[in-house]
Image (cartoon, rainbow, N blue to C red; front, side, top):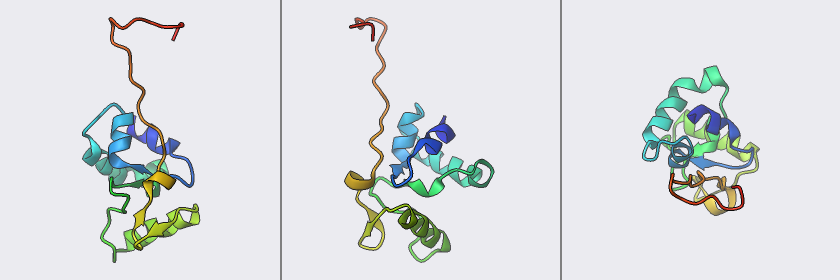
Length: 112
């Protein structure tokens, strides 16, 4: 489910590790999302660059090649950085969250 949600992040938007974990039904599983990204990116051709931390920053060390590559790929998609490392999640964050599922005893309204 994590890979499915990462593939759905639109070009020009970013999602956080925690957001992807929640969408995949694993609240609190942000580290697991990072692990999956680390082990699957090449095989799955995932848009890994679109997943950032909850502060809007790239998680790699700022001077690393990985940081530079991720930033370059995001800029190419039109994402802007301030303070040279942070993305404004209000502007560029993907506004997707899990829908609240009805409990068994909640009434169905209007055939929803």
